[in-house]
Each structure stands twice: as structure tokens, then as C-alpha cells.
Length: 539
Image (cartoon, rainbow, N blue to C red):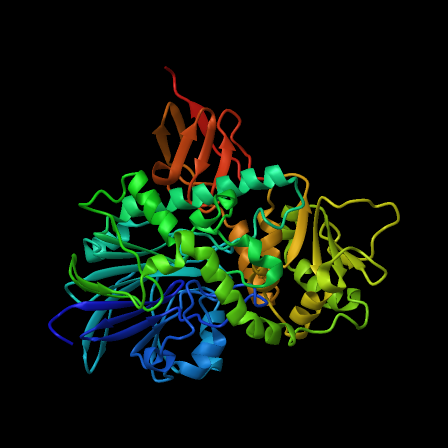
């Protein structure tokens, strides 16, 4: 390489290849369709030279979400002599999965502590911010900071850290910020609610995600911001409507998945790209940018980015739908058949031992949940099987006569349920739910305990999650904001409300995850429990 500079290649979605004079780091190399072939990297990255990219010195996989942890790509294309930069997670699932694939060299980092890694090419300073709440990915999420002594890069991918001061203290100014701005979620698209309400909720969700990302831009204060970990492509015919078609289809502005071009425009509108700082940089799969400290020396693209955005986006997605149709069909052929023994027995065997170990989580769910399974996921028919997850009584049972509609329920294709059971899958969120190949309904607010349960279908995971919720958190510190005195830490995941809290009238929103509270009562408007301490200041 010429001189001391850092070369960053976008390899799709949250993936980057970071080349320095002291070695290369491959980050989150996702290429194969995932979540039951619902998600495909956008823009297409399947033509990249993955063998060359995989011949790296260091590997960093932020967490086990399958749009970051691509088992097939890691197994087939990534050098097993690479040293893994391992986040500091309390449950060792990520390390175990990498070891199964043949990786043997690990640097076990300590959460938010800078460390130096060295090889025969030189030394790099790295720090991994590890998020460890049950809601963070599948038992963990993380962000990586790396410096070669001149250029500091913060790869935040999906992580939502609550303490960014540690970066400034350890590294000083950040030159390049690789930032997620478009969430991975199924809300509200899969909910059985009126179309107009769904559109309103989607619009709010979309904007909150971009607002949160802009808050991070302001807090980090990097010279360059690269929107990344954006939306996938939904190329199955049944899911194609989930795409944000941009200016080619203004009627679809309520998609919760804004793309890079949309977010860069948001930065300009809201002043976080003012020509002097927080400069937004477009990168697509295969784009290469070279940095010397805060200076962008050069950026090259494999094609004009406009070819896949704006008025060209729908045509591009149509071409990709045709290209990936055989891949999606082949994936569907691997799913378990719908026919077989009634599912209630296998579900009892899976769920009841987990229920027995998780009093706090089961009590937090607090009611029976319906699971309606139909071949193909269509309308109920003679082959439909309904099973009740009775959390108050810690059992899985058949519906009672006249029981009626459950407060929370799921309609899922029988094939998907049989597949996760066949594969001994410990996390339905990381498979069925993120696929968006289901529908759901609820009466009342979001129940965080329920989705935590579905993430933690092993003894180790559920023990950690139950202990997390049981642990007492200090909320004694207070802040004043817009005429209110409120506790400093968000009751949800302890974000600093001085940085992430937004007050409108008598309602507080924490922009880290979009949770809301009624300030006069302190009641959480998003989920049961999680009350907030708040009082109005005298005028």
C-alpha cells in the first residue's frame, strides 16, 4: 500500500473490508439470502470476489443475526487462519458457532476497552463496544472502533450504544462513521391491523429510525458518515411489496425500510450534512474509499450509484427478483414438509422446560399466546393446528372450548415451524420473525418479554435473560428537560435520556428504540411495566 492510509471497501449491507498497513479486517460478510430467503443484500453483492475478501488478517462478526453471520460464506470463503476479534458477550454462542466453522484464533476483547492487536505487518488499536441486553440482537450486539494511528473508523453496524464518551476518551476524533439507519424489524408490516393504521405506524417507525441515526451522527461527530446496514431486498413475490421503491413509487413512502439515498437526503434536510462536518458518503457494494485521517483521498464505485436508486430502483429490483428466483426456490426446497405428527408434542418438549426456568419472563408475558399453524401460511383449513403457549401456567396446551381470540397470537406456515424444530433452532426471532413470513395480532402494547422468550430457547440463554430482568438497575440520577425532572436512564435499556430523550407536550420518546412514556403518570406507553420517574418543574 502507498503511505499510511486506510482503504474501506463496502461489501454490502453492514459488511466492510478495512485495509491498513498493519493488516486487513473483514467485517460482517453477508452474501447469501437469509431468514427463509426473505432477505437479500441490497445492492447485490454476489459478484464480489469473496475469496479475495476472505483472505483477511482479522475477522469481526458483530453478532449472530444472519444478515451479519453468514455461515456458508464464512465456511467457504474466509481464511480460517484469520484472527477473530471477539465481542465480550456473557453467553459464548458466537464463539462456539465460529469454532464450528474452523476458526481457532481469537482475541477476546473486554467491553469498551481499547486493546492493541499485532501481527508481522504491524499494530492496530481496536475496541469493541458490546451490548449485552437480551434485546440486543440474539444475545448481544456490538460496534467496532479501529485505528492505525492516523485514521479512526467506527463501524457501528446494528449496535445502539448508550455511552459514546468511551470512544472519544480512547481514540479522540472519529474520522469515518459506518452507521446503521434502517432497522431490522417486522413491525408493523405483519400486524393484523387496518391498512391506514399500518401505514401511519410504518411512517412513524421509519422516521424514528432515521432520527435516532442522526442523533448518533451528532454525538459521534465524525468527519465522514457512511450509511450502512440498510434495507435488504425482498425479492420473493409474496414479500416484494416491502421494498421502498423510492422516487419511482411515491405512493410507497410508508415502507419502514428507507435506503441510503433517502437517509443522505435526511442528513441534508436536517443539517447533519452541512458541507463542513458530518459529511455523508454514498457507498454501494464494491465501492472503495481511501482515507488519510479526516481526509477522503479517493472514492470509486463499481457503477453509478444512481443506477440502483431513485427512479431506477424499481427496475433494478425487478432484475434482481428474476436473478434470485432460482436461489429462493432452492432455499424453499430445503424447508421441512407441512405433513407430519401434530406439532403440540414437539412444542411442549421445546417450550415447557424453558418456561419452567423463567418465572420473571413468563410473568412478564402474563397471558396465553396463540400459535396458529397452517400449511403454506394461508387461511385456516382442516390442516390448521392451533397450540396455546400458556405462560401463566407454564404449559403448552390445546385451546379450551370457547377460549376465543388470544391477546397475542401468531399465524405461521407449518413448514417454517417444522423447519426450526428440525434444525433445533434456539432463536425464532433470528429465523421466523425476521423473515416477515408470518402475521400477528395483539391487544395492548408491545411485550418485550415475549420476544425475549423466543430468542432464548436454550437453558443458557434463558437463564441469562431472566437474570438480566431480575437485576436491579440504579435510576437515582435525574436530569431536567423541557420543564420536567426525569430519571436520567431509560427504564428500557438504560439509554441516557439527556441525549436520546425527546419531549413533546406531556409525552417522552427515547429515540434509541422509540419507546414512549406519559410524563404526568410515568406510565410506559410502549410495553407493560418499565415505569418512569418524572415530575413537572415549577414554572
